[in-house]
Length: 362
Image 1 (cartoon, rainbow, N blue to C red):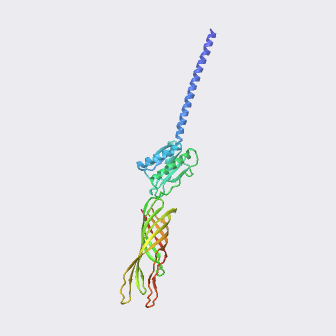
Image 2 (cartoon, helix red, strand yellow):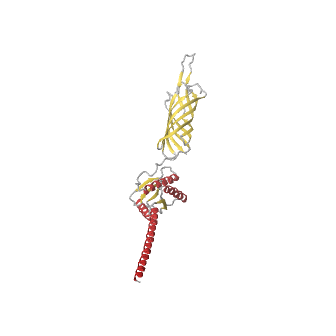
Image 3 (cartoon, rainbow, N blue to C red):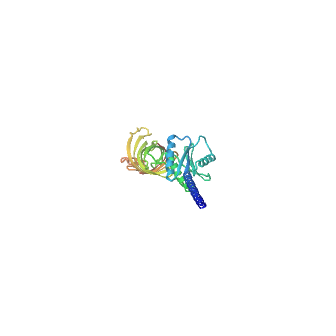
Protein backbone atom coordinates (compact mmCIF):
# COMPACT_ATOMS: atom_id res chain seq x y z
CA UNK A 1 0.00 0.00 0.00
CA UNK A 2 2.72 2.43 0.96
CA UNK A 3 4.72 1.30 -2.07
CA UNK A 4 1.78 2.26 -4.34
CA UNK A 5 1.45 5.67 -2.74
CA UNK A 6 5.16 6.36 -3.29
CA UNK A 7 4.93 5.43 -6.95
CA UNK A 8 1.98 7.79 -7.44
CA UNK A 9 3.92 10.65 -5.81
CA UNK A 10 6.91 10.11 -8.11
CA UNK A 11 4.66 10.09 -11.22
CA UNK A 12 3.00 13.31 -10.09
CA UNK A 13 6.35 15.09 -9.70
CA UNK A 14 7.49 14.00 -13.17
CA UNK A 15 4.30 15.30 -14.82
CA UNK A 16 4.51 18.68 -13.07
CA UNK A 17 8.18 19.06 -13.97
CA UNK A 18 7.44 18.34 -17.65
CA UNK A 19 4.67 20.92 -17.78
CA UNK A 20 6.85 23.54 -16.12
CA UNK A 21 9.67 22.94 -18.62
CA UNK A 22 7.24 23.20 -21.53
CA UNK A 23 5.85 26.52 -20.26
CA UNK A 24 9.36 27.91 -19.80
CA UNK A 25 10.30 26.82 -23.31
CA UNK A 26 7.24 28.58 -24.72
CA UNK A 27 8.08 31.73 -22.77
CA UNK A 28 11.67 31.65 -24.05
CA UNK A 29 10.52 31.17 -27.62
CA UNK A 30 8.06 34.04 -27.29
CA UNK A 31 10.74 36.30 -25.82
CA UNK A 32 13.11 35.38 -28.64
CA UNK A 33 10.44 36.13 -31.23
CA UNK A 34 9.66 39.49 -29.63
CA UNK A 35 13.33 40.35 -29.48
CA UNK A 36 13.72 39.45 -33.13
CA UNK A 37 10.71 41.60 -34.03
CA UNK A 38 12.02 44.57 -32.06
CA UNK A 39 15.44 44.14 -33.62
CA UNK A 40 13.95 44.10 -37.13
CA UNK A 41 11.92 47.19 -36.42
CA UNK A 42 14.95 48.87 -34.92
CA UNK A 43 17.05 47.88 -37.92
CA UNK A 44 14.46 49.42 -40.24
CA UNK A 45 14.52 52.62 -38.20
CA UNK A 46 18.34 52.68 -38.34
CA UNK A 47 18.10 52.86 -42.14
CA UNK A 48 15.91 55.98 -42.15
CA UNK A 49 17.04 59.46 -43.19
CA UNK A 50 15.05 62.68 -42.80
CA UNK A 51 14.90 65.04 -45.77
CA UNK A 52 13.43 68.53 -45.19
CA UNK A 53 12.32 70.34 -48.34
CA UNK A 54 12.14 74.17 -48.52
CA UNK A 55 8.92 75.83 -47.39
CA UNK A 56 6.52 77.02 -50.05
CA UNK A 57 7.85 74.79 -52.80
CA UNK A 58 5.26 74.24 -55.59
CA UNK A 59 3.59 70.86 -55.39
CA UNK A 60 4.99 69.62 -58.70
CA UNK A 61 8.55 70.52 -57.71
CA UNK A 62 8.05 69.03 -54.25
CA UNK A 63 6.82 65.77 -55.76
CA UNK A 64 9.71 65.68 -58.23
CA UNK A 65 12.18 66.32 -55.41
CA UNK A 66 10.69 63.58 -53.22
CA UNK A 67 10.70 61.02 -56.04
CA UNK A 68 14.29 61.79 -57.06
CA UNK A 69 15.63 61.69 -53.51
CA UNK A 70 13.69 58.55 -52.60
CA UNK A 71 15.08 56.75 -55.64
CA UNK A 72 18.68 57.59 -54.75
CA UNK A 73 18.24 56.81 -51.03
CA UNK A 74 16.61 53.43 -51.73
CA UNK A 75 19.49 52.46 -54.03
CA UNK A 76 21.87 52.43 -51.06
CA UNK A 77 19.43 50.63 -48.73
CA UNK A 78 17.99 53.65 -46.95
CA UNK A 79 14.41 54.65 -46.19
CA UNK A 80 13.30 58.24 -46.80
CA UNK A 81 11.26 60.36 -44.40
CA UNK A 82 10.30 63.36 -46.56
CA UNK A 83 9.15 66.50 -44.69
CA UNK A 84 8.62 70.17 -45.50
CA UNK A 85 10.12 73.05 -43.55
CA UNK A 86 7.87 75.46 -41.71
CA UNK A 87 7.33 79.02 -42.85
CA UNK A 88 9.64 81.74 -41.62
CA UNK A 89 13.35 82.45 -41.75
CA UNK A 90 15.32 80.30 -39.37
CA UNK A 91 19.02 80.59 -38.63
CA UNK A 92 21.48 77.76 -39.05
CA UNK A 93 21.53 76.92 -35.33
CA UNK A 94 17.74 76.70 -35.21
CA UNK A 95 17.67 74.54 -38.35
CA UNK A 96 20.24 72.20 -36.83
CA UNK A 97 18.22 71.89 -33.63
CA UNK A 98 15.06 71.10 -35.59
CA UNK A 99 16.85 68.57 -37.79
CA UNK A 100 18.41 66.83 -34.80
CA UNK A 101 15.01 66.59 -33.08
CA UNK A 102 13.38 65.16 -36.22
CA UNK A 103 16.21 62.64 -36.61
CA UNK A 104 15.66 61.41 -33.04
CA UNK A 105 11.88 61.30 -33.52
CA UNK A 106 12.18 59.08 -36.61
CA UNK A 107 15.19 57.09 -35.31
CA UNK A 108 17.10 58.31 -38.41
CA UNK A 109 20.83 58.05 -39.05
CA UNK A 110 20.90 61.63 -40.31
CA UNK A 111 18.95 64.60 -41.58
CA UNK A 112 19.23 66.75 -44.73
CA UNK A 113 17.64 70.09 -45.47
CA UNK A 114 17.70 72.60 -48.33
CA UNK A 115 18.32 76.31 -47.86
CA UNK A 116 16.66 78.16 -50.77
CA UNK A 117 18.17 81.66 -50.95
CA UNK A 118 16.32 84.72 -52.33
CA UNK A 119 18.93 84.77 -55.12
CA UNK A 120 17.35 81.47 -56.31
CA UNK A 121 20.45 79.52 -55.33
CA UNK A 122 19.99 76.30 -53.36
CA UNK A 123 22.31 74.85 -50.72
CA UNK A 124 21.94 71.44 -49.10
CA UNK A 125 22.96 70.69 -45.51
CA UNK A 126 23.86 67.16 -44.40
CA UNK A 127 23.98 66.30 -40.68
CA UNK A 128 24.43 63.04 -38.79
CA UNK A 129 21.99 62.05 -36.06
CA UNK A 130 24.16 63.49 -33.28
CA UNK A 131 24.58 66.89 -34.89
CA UNK A 132 28.34 66.60 -34.49
CA UNK A 133 29.05 66.74 -38.22
CA UNK A 134 27.41 69.12 -40.69
CA UNK A 135 28.38 69.50 -44.35
CA UNK A 136 26.99 72.00 -46.85
CA UNK A 137 26.97 71.55 -50.62
CA UNK A 138 25.78 73.97 -53.35
CA UNK A 139 22.99 72.62 -55.53
CA UNK A 140 22.82 75.37 -58.12
CA UNK A 141 25.16 77.76 -59.88
CA UNK A 142 24.44 80.74 -62.07
CA UNK A 143 21.82 79.88 -64.72
CA UNK A 144 21.28 76.36 -63.32
CA UNK A 145 17.72 75.11 -63.77
CA UNK A 146 15.60 73.78 -60.89
CA UNK A 147 15.58 70.36 -62.54
CA UNK A 148 19.36 70.28 -62.36
CA UNK A 149 19.25 71.39 -58.71
CA UNK A 150 16.78 68.60 -57.87
CA UNK A 151 19.00 66.04 -59.59
CA UNK A 152 22.02 67.31 -57.65
CA UNK A 153 20.08 67.12 -54.37
CA UNK A 154 19.11 63.52 -55.08
CA UNK A 155 22.69 62.50 -55.91
CA UNK A 156 24.01 64.15 -52.74
CA UNK A 157 21.29 62.55 -50.62
CA UNK A 158 22.14 59.10 -51.97
CA UNK A 159 25.87 59.52 -51.37
CA UNK A 160 25.32 60.97 -47.88
CA UNK A 161 22.89 58.18 -46.90
CA UNK A 162 25.40 55.57 -48.02
CA UNK A 163 28.09 57.23 -45.89
CA UNK A 164 25.82 57.47 -42.85
CA UNK A 165 24.69 53.84 -43.10
CA UNK A 166 28.30 52.69 -43.37
CA UNK A 167 29.34 54.97 -40.49
CA UNK A 168 31.95 56.66 -42.69
CA UNK A 169 32.72 60.42 -42.61
CA UNK A 170 30.31 62.64 -44.53
CA UNK A 171 32.84 65.43 -45.04
CA UNK A 172 34.03 63.91 -48.32
CA UNK A 173 33.01 65.00 -51.80
CA UNK A 174 29.35 64.00 -51.85
CA UNK A 175 28.37 65.52 -55.17
CA UNK A 176 29.75 65.89 -58.66
CA UNK A 177 31.04 69.32 -59.56
CA UNK A 178 28.40 71.66 -60.85
CA UNK A 179 28.68 72.12 -64.57
CA UNK A 180 27.89 75.23 -66.53
CA UNK A 181 24.62 75.06 -68.43
CA UNK A 182 24.92 73.59 -71.89
CA UNK A 183 25.17 76.27 -74.57
CA UNK A 184 22.16 76.93 -76.74
CA UNK A 185 21.56 78.49 -80.13
CA UNK A 186 21.62 82.26 -79.90
CA UNK A 187 21.30 85.42 -81.94
CA UNK A 188 24.13 87.90 -81.31
CA UNK A 189 24.02 91.62 -82.10
CA UNK A 190 27.31 93.54 -82.00
CA UNK A 191 28.11 97.25 -81.91
CA UNK A 192 31.36 99.04 -81.27
CA UNK A 193 34.38 101.02 -82.39
CA UNK A 194 36.38 100.01 -85.47
CA UNK A 195 39.76 101.35 -86.59
CA UNK A 196 41.62 100.52 -89.80
CA UNK A 197 45.15 101.21 -90.98
CA UNK A 198 44.08 102.18 -94.50
CA UNK A 199 46.84 104.02 -96.37
CA UNK A 200 50.14 105.84 -95.73
CA UNK A 201 48.39 109.18 -96.20
CA UNK A 202 45.48 108.10 -93.95
CA UNK A 203 47.23 105.83 -91.41
CA UNK A 204 44.22 105.27 -89.15
CA UNK A 205 40.56 105.54 -90.13
CA UNK A 206 38.03 105.63 -87.28
CA UNK A 207 34.58 104.12 -87.64
CA UNK A 208 31.67 102.24 -86.09
CA UNK A 209 31.00 98.58 -86.67
CA UNK A 210 27.67 96.78 -86.42
CA UNK A 211 27.06 93.09 -86.92
CA UNK A 212 24.75 90.15 -86.35
CA UNK A 213 25.55 86.46 -86.02
CA UNK A 214 23.87 83.14 -85.29
CA UNK A 215 25.61 80.77 -82.87
CA UNK A 216 25.18 77.02 -82.55
CA UNK A 217 25.74 75.01 -79.34
CA UNK A 218 28.90 73.37 -80.71
CA UNK A 219 30.58 76.80 -80.85
CA UNK A 220 30.38 77.51 -84.56
CA UNK A 221 28.69 80.65 -85.88
CA UNK A 222 28.09 82.69 -89.04
CA UNK A 223 27.26 86.36 -89.39
CA UNK A 224 27.42 89.61 -91.33
CA UNK A 225 28.87 92.99 -90.40
CA UNK A 226 29.22 96.51 -91.73
CA UNK A 227 31.67 99.29 -90.88
CA UNK A 228 30.75 102.95 -91.21
CA UNK A 229 33.42 105.63 -91.29
CA UNK A 230 33.34 109.28 -92.34
CA UNK A 231 34.56 110.07 -95.88
CA UNK A 232 38.28 110.64 -96.34
CA UNK A 233 39.11 114.13 -97.58
CA UNK A 234 42.15 114.43 -99.79
CA UNK A 235 43.51 117.91 -100.47
CA UNK A 236 46.08 118.19 -103.23
CA UNK A 237 46.21 119.45 -106.78
CA UNK A 238 42.80 117.87 -106.99
CA UNK A 239 40.55 117.76 -103.95
CA UNK A 240 38.28 114.78 -103.50
CA UNK A 241 36.37 112.74 -100.94
CA UNK A 242 36.48 108.96 -100.69
CA UNK A 243 33.55 107.18 -99.02
CA UNK A 244 33.96 103.51 -98.07
CA UNK A 245 31.16 100.96 -97.57
CA UNK A 246 32.67 97.62 -96.41
CA UNK A 247 30.30 94.66 -95.93
CA UNK A 248 31.57 91.36 -94.51
CA UNK A 249 30.36 87.77 -94.37
CA UNK A 250 32.18 85.87 -91.61
CA UNK A 251 32.10 82.51 -89.90
CA UNK A 252 34.11 80.89 -87.16
CA UNK A 253 34.36 78.68 -84.08
CA UNK A 254 34.47 79.69 -80.40
CA UNK A 255 35.84 77.80 -77.41
CA UNK A 256 35.67 78.58 -73.66
CA UNK A 257 39.08 78.06 -72.01
CA UNK A 258 37.95 79.92 -68.88
CA UNK A 259 34.66 80.73 -67.23
CA UNK A 260 32.94 83.73 -68.86
CA UNK A 261 35.76 84.00 -71.41
CA UNK A 262 35.62 82.77 -75.02
CA UNK A 263 38.17 82.91 -77.80
CA UNK A 264 37.57 82.15 -81.43
CA UNK A 265 38.90 82.28 -84.96
CA UNK A 266 37.07 83.73 -87.96
CA UNK A 267 37.37 83.62 -91.71
CA UNK A 268 35.73 86.53 -93.52
CA UNK A 269 35.09 87.63 -97.09
CA UNK A 270 34.00 91.14 -97.90
CA UNK A 271 33.36 93.72 -100.55
CA UNK A 272 34.18 97.38 -100.09
CA UNK A 273 32.39 99.81 -102.35
CA UNK A 274 34.42 103.01 -102.72
CA UNK A 275 32.87 106.16 -104.05
CA UNK A 276 35.18 109.00 -105.03
CA UNK A 277 33.69 112.47 -105.38
CA UNK A 278 36.22 114.88 -106.88
CA UNK A 279 36.04 118.60 -106.24
CA UNK A 280 38.39 121.45 -106.98
CA UNK A 281 39.01 124.70 -105.18
CA UNK A 282 41.01 126.11 -108.09
CA UNK A 283 39.02 128.96 -109.63
CA UNK A 284 37.65 128.23 -113.04
CA UNK A 285 37.62 124.43 -112.64
CA UNK A 286 34.31 122.68 -112.24
CA UNK A 287 33.72 119.76 -109.94
CA UNK A 288 34.36 116.44 -111.58
CA UNK A 289 31.89 113.57 -111.66
CA UNK A 290 31.90 110.83 -109.04
CA UNK A 291 33.23 107.36 -109.68
CA UNK A 292 32.50 104.09 -107.87
CA UNK A 293 34.65 100.98 -107.74
CA UNK A 294 34.52 97.78 -105.71
CA UNK A 295 37.35 96.11 -103.82
CA UNK A 296 37.23 92.46 -102.75
CA UNK A 297 38.62 91.61 -99.33
CA UNK A 298 39.63 88.53 -97.31
CA UNK A 299 40.48 88.33 -93.64
CA UNK A 300 41.56 85.97 -90.85
CA UNK A 301 40.47 87.20 -87.42
CA UNK A 302 41.13 86.53 -83.76
CA UNK A 303 38.14 87.16 -81.49
CA UNK A 304 37.99 87.36 -77.68
CA UNK A 305 34.76 87.69 -75.72
CA UNK A 306 34.21 88.27 -72.00
CA UNK A 307 30.71 87.69 -70.59
CA UNK A 308 29.55 90.46 -68.27
CA UNK A 309 26.13 88.87 -67.81
CA UNK A 310 24.16 86.04 -69.37
CA UNK A 311 23.16 88.30 -72.27
CA UNK A 312 25.90 90.97 -72.47
CA UNK A 313 29.58 90.59 -73.40
CA UNK A 314 32.62 92.67 -74.32
CA UNK A 315 34.07 91.72 -77.72
CA UNK A 316 37.57 92.34 -79.07
CA UNK A 317 38.43 91.51 -82.67
CA UNK A 318 41.77 91.97 -84.44
CA UNK A 319 42.42 91.07 -88.06
CA UNK A 320 44.75 91.49 -90.99
CA UNK A 321 42.81 92.15 -94.19
CA UNK A 322 43.97 91.59 -97.77
CA UNK A 323 42.62 93.61 -100.70
CA UNK A 324 42.45 91.21 -103.63
CA UNK A 325 42.22 93.95 -106.28
CA UNK A 326 43.72 97.03 -104.72
CA UNK A 327 44.07 100.19 -106.79
CA UNK A 328 45.44 103.69 -106.30
CA UNK A 329 43.93 107.13 -106.78
CA UNK A 330 46.36 109.05 -108.97
CA UNK A 331 46.85 111.47 -111.81
CA UNK A 332 48.26 109.97 -114.99
CA UNK A 333 51.34 111.56 -116.59
CA UNK A 334 50.77 114.26 -119.19
CA UNK A 335 52.97 113.62 -122.26
CA UNK A 336 52.42 117.13 -123.63
CA UNK A 337 53.44 118.99 -120.52
CA UNK A 338 55.86 116.36 -119.34
CA UNK A 339 54.32 116.24 -115.90
CA UNK A 340 54.93 112.90 -114.13
CA UNK A 341 52.33 110.62 -112.63
CA UNK A 342 51.00 111.82 -109.26
CA UNK A 343 49.57 109.43 -106.64
CA UNK A 344 47.07 111.09 -104.32
CA UNK A 345 46.02 108.05 -102.27
CA UNK A 346 47.46 104.51 -102.24
CA UNK A 347 45.49 102.11 -99.96
CA UNK A 348 47.43 99.30 -98.37
CA UNK A 349 47.32 95.93 -100.06
CA UNK A 350 47.56 94.35 -96.56
CA UNK A 351 45.88 96.42 -93.89
CA UNK A 352 45.02 95.94 -90.22
CA UNK A 353 41.67 96.41 -88.42
CA UNK A 354 40.89 96.38 -84.69
CA UNK A 355 37.41 96.41 -83.16
CA UNK A 356 36.15 96.77 -79.59
CA UNK A 357 32.51 96.78 -78.58
CA UNK A 358 29.57 95.05 -76.93
CA UNK A 359 27.59 91.96 -77.91
CA UNK A 360 23.97 91.35 -76.96
CA UNK A 361 23.24 87.61 -76.82
CA UNK A 362 19.61 86.51 -77.03
